[in-house]
Length: 204
Ligand SMILES: N[C@@H](CCC(=O)N[C@@H](CS)C(=O)NCC(=O)O)C(=O)O
Image (cartoon, rainbow, N blue to C red; front, side):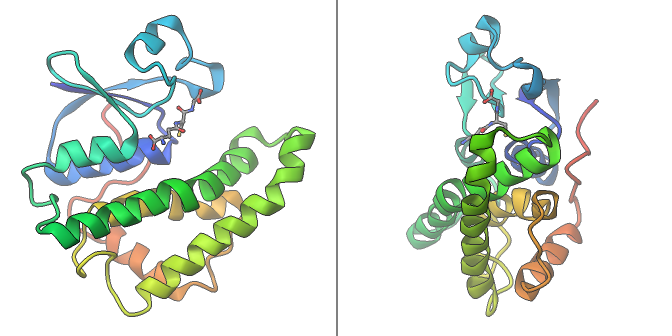
């Protein structure tokens, strides 16, 4: 059986949980409390030297880190594997966009505002820029979704899962999604899909 090391509120972990739910994959769920440093212990670092969840442990003890790599691994050979060269490239395009232009701003602002609450002076200084760049990522998504139902080839897929995870909780970082009707409609479409699970639904 697969094991997912994760933290329940993590959007990066949620991406993996969401795909496993859609694929009907049973797995063991191991919570690591990122707030108390449980991903930085020697025992966890032996599994992932980068000290972060999500981390997937395969049946033979091999580990895969990075949410995008975990999604790609799980999707292989399933209906979630993008068919064709262009669809694969466009899926990766949006997954890399999520990691470089979206997650560092939207997820980090959410973490600071919703979980830390008291920010360091450096974080206070950095927050307006994070918000600005988070809104820039939302604008890119809104433009793309204005004429499409899903990110790649108008079919629900890995790019949607990767981007949904932190977008649907962006309000917890005080992002106002009211001016983004296409994003809101896309999120509703995803939440309404059969087999969908919420961020707080995981094997216990
Ligand atoms: N690029 C990574 C980011 C992973 C990440 O930032 N994980 C956070 C939680 S969402 C973490 O483990 N933080 C604990 C720490 O850094 O000690 C991914 O997509 O999986």
